[in-house]
Image (cartoon, rainbow over all chains, first blue to last red; front, side):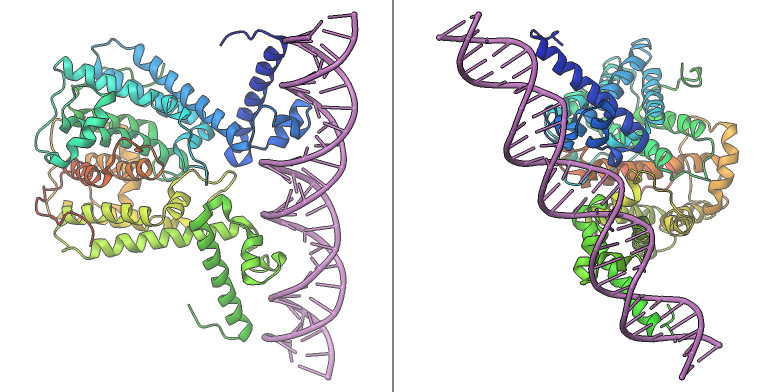
Amino acid sequence: MSAGRTARERVRAELTREITDIARRQLAVDGAAGLSLRAVAREMGMVSSAIYRYFPSRDDLLTALIIDGYNALGETVENADAARPREDHTGRWMAVCHAVRDWALAHPHEYALLYGSPVPGYKAPMDTVTAAIRDTVVYGRILSDAHRAGALRPPGGFPATPGSFSEDAMRVREVMPDVPDDVVARALAAWTGLFGWVNFELFGQFNNVVLDPGTAFDHAMRCHAALLGLPAADALPVHGK
Amino acid sequence: MSAGRTARERVRAELTREITDIARRQLAVDGAAGLSLRAVAREMGMVSSAIYRYFPSRDDLLTALIIDGYNALGETVENADAARPREDHTGRWMAVCHAVRDWALAHPHEYALLYGSPVPGYKAPMDTVTAAIRDTVVYGRILSDAHRAGALRPPGGFPATPGSFSEDAMRVREVMPDVPDDVVARALAAWTGLFGWVNFELFGQFNNVVLDPGTAFDHAMRCHAALLGLPAADALPVHGK
DNA sequence: CAATCGTCAAGAGCAGTGCTCTCGTTTTAT
DNA sequence: ATAAAACGAGAGCACTGCTCTTGACGATTG
């Protein structure tokens, strides 16, 4: 974030930003496979080989876009969570759900880059993981807060968590401190349920069947909340802003 | 399926099959973006332009592979369902879940083609839909059978289904006859939960966190079954064959 | 101030892609 | 037997990611 000391560094940072901006626009229009270094260069009035001064390969440019995407989604989710009173755990969960869905609908190709099939042969570098779990961290904090406040009352009559799950639960608890195993297990189901729904909606599995996915989505996420033991919140504003 | 009357028709059918077979092998190795008409032609000892006598474009070849994939998955799911006694609704649901997951793990690139991000600019032709819903039809039949047998007792304490969902419920009921709205709504959540989990597992979101996804998956699917009102089935064989 | 060293854009070029068109040949249908 | 349809081969177009070399500019030293 430092302004860059020499003039060269500043113009380099500026050009790097311009490249990613143009690339992101191309991504938004044509999707990941339509991202062309030559097209980016053309739009910048540069020759294609010059781009390689800034990104050593197409994959590196894609990685930059992926990190940006995770951060954009993560920030959106953080803001949606922060806009709710801390003790309104159910409201925070629902806000996170809708934030994810709304962002995905607004940025379908970027979302596909993050949660769709990975581009073949592409291996996510370590740099991405810290950005990738920003939304998950928010999710975990909500459940931790709810549990510590004693607001979590998971309904009975559901299968007992297998003992062999405890090891994985420990690892998940790093973003979900103190939460007991059975809630951790259900938390995985709810979290995958959220993204599974968004995937179905975005990738066309609901086409010609579920015509009003917003309503069904809201209800499904409330069901997940109930499964987690979050208290029912009846008087939530229906949706977005 | 007719053997083909003229010699030309037979060799044409044979070559078409050979093309899709080679393409499927390439798909399994390199993923959808690595599928190259020229490489297929090379492997067949043909010249690239000859392929266009059989598939007018790369997208058409991809479509054939997609339909094959849906049918392969659908058949696997049908068999898994049929292997259970008809009145063991919970067992059938669990068998379907594991069949989907096992097939996805065995054919990751084909699964990604079906349930990952759609290839950009690609619009699924109508031919695909009948194949695409084979698994969903099985799923719907299980719930219908369970409901008609009076075996469905959805737990209380969960959010009421919004009235505006009834229209979408009607459409979903075409593969899930007689099932009441509230179960239809939860069925969507469970179904998306299944594929959302498989996506997370296959596309790397569980990396370094959930190391034994099989156990957690089985438990999560049992939770979904309970949410649907399917009776608890305690003595199921743990997993595969 | 002047020489140098690193950075940069440009251009040519390689290997690969999807796809089109034409040109003989072969097979089918009449 | 003849006309029509289908077919494989080949050349070619426009495009891609990426590499290498060349020449110019700018910042940092001596």
